[in-house]
Length: 112
Length: 112
Length: 112
Image 1 (tube, each protein chain N blue to C red):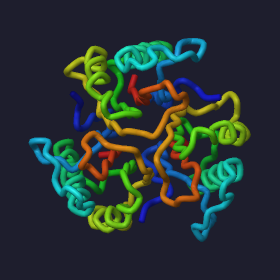
Image 2 (tube, rainbow over the protein chains, first blue to last red):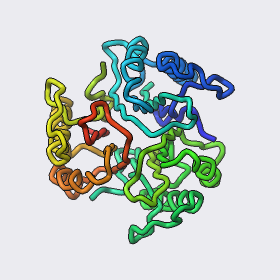
Image 3 (cartoon, rainbow over the protein chains, first blue to last red):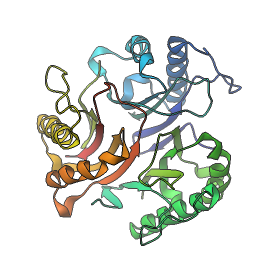
């Protein structure tokens, strides 16, 4: 239905990542930290398949379903990015995501 | 008030497209498939004016007002993209769009 | 926690700007025009630090918490962009932003 990532020159557009395993089952129901870890592990895999990694991310868009999950999201996110290579970031609260148990979605642009 | 598309080098940023006709009247009230068709016809026209087409789209962001419209959206979307040139994609459910009868909005980046 | 802007070649990705002052206090509680001014003043400062300005913006994404604030948002926005250099634009209504008193957030891409 879509591509996990599309490269155009050295820019790589990464589809919104959610806390699904390889069979599209939700990982970490009700647990924002577990979901955030799964999201960034999925994103790392997509980036590695494109020849890069999380250090190449220049921008992320974060969609949460509840603002109360923001601290937990950030606690995990901090472990995935180098302090001197933080991406530009936008975070908004949405009405929903593609599955009712998902708490977060993260989209990214990388330059590899 | 805005540009339908802005080119920077070979990258074209396309404004969020909704199911409006040329007089900004909603097409397909209550009908997600009709609205999705109108959106991609509008996007095709914007891309053609920029010298490209839907095959040049590298990323789309989809905003729906109700997750129940996702299957209908995808049924129509599939007809507009070549299976071997699918864009990266993010889909979230929002509280609303710029007119209460709109069910979907799609923003895109193309490389022409 | 994030970078206000990240440059990749001549493309600059600007984080979502909200109506915070330098101590992250909300400016213009309940006043969409005041908040929109603060947002574009903040964005201008970020762009100037990156060696550019609002004329270099090629795309904006606008997130409002209530569609009734759209006219006030647009009234102010018009003063910040040259009529012959309007960015591509997407506007959606979200459930919330990172602080309950925020009415708008604007993210941008510039080419400098």
